[in-house]
Length: 356
Image 1: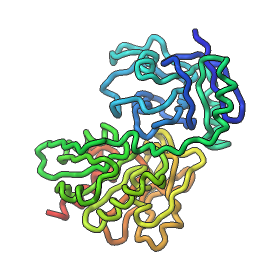
Image 2 (image 1 turned 180 degrees about the vertical axis):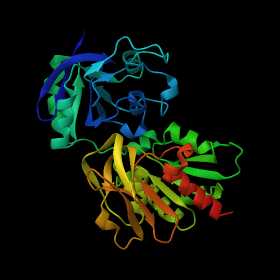
Image 3 (image 1 turned 45 degrees about the horizontal axis):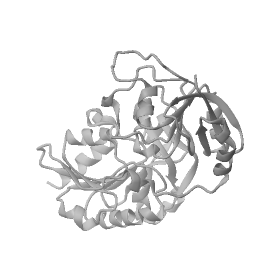
Image 4 (image 1 turned 120 degrees about the vertical axis):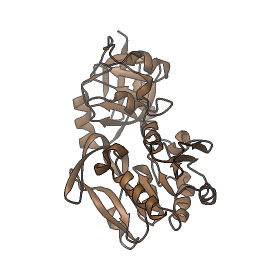
């Protein structure tokens, strides 16, 4: 076993076992509460640049198979686990988690008390950490962690570069402004609609000209108020006067900004598959991945109304406009086959049928 070190920005150094790629990496440390789905999390564009901690103690026990990728790459910068399986079940085929991370040039570290890390994040908030294999490089990494982090526009790193059309012969087209959309959403939408995927900086006129009947602003990574996202916010504002607009996760925050709301960084965000959301008289258990939220008080006078709330911490989870077909949810939507519980697909059905 090869030694590795987890270096925290407060100077703490934890010793563990290296797996995955032989490289050093640093980034914000966030945790996911999912008991499975490590591959889906690693390939979720919303984790771009972040070092992921698995709250569940074992990862890699069922290997890695291409069919579970949520995108075409591993976007998490690193992976921290209590234990990783070196001999996974062959039920799903594929490769080991170790081989998968190595081929995608992503370092991992195991043998760490991840429960302690999760407690630390919940107490102190999101912190910067680094994974280092060479002990001689620990001191240098401590210095780097104290430097101000570069404020990248992460959406520009994961968004499509060209317009992509997926024709399913459905006749009704739905546009997606790609801020880091995952394959699952595209596949689910394609069951019901033709889909047109636009780069995040596409102009409103070009989206209107596509013939899309409604526009979804997708999930994605980073700060929605980053200066590099100003053009996306402007596009959404222009579109909202003529097309139905639905924002998902980061996309919901962008929609809120377009109407004059304020977004703010959360202490440690929502990451995982068990976030309770109250909508009307029902509570839904949802999957989420975001580090920013919408300030509810800033919605006053914008026309947006908060109508879904997080049961755990009272933060905003969903909104709608008083007059326009404009909606936003902070969680990942249920697929269309769960129509009763799928806010997204019920909203799409409402707005597309109204336009017939």
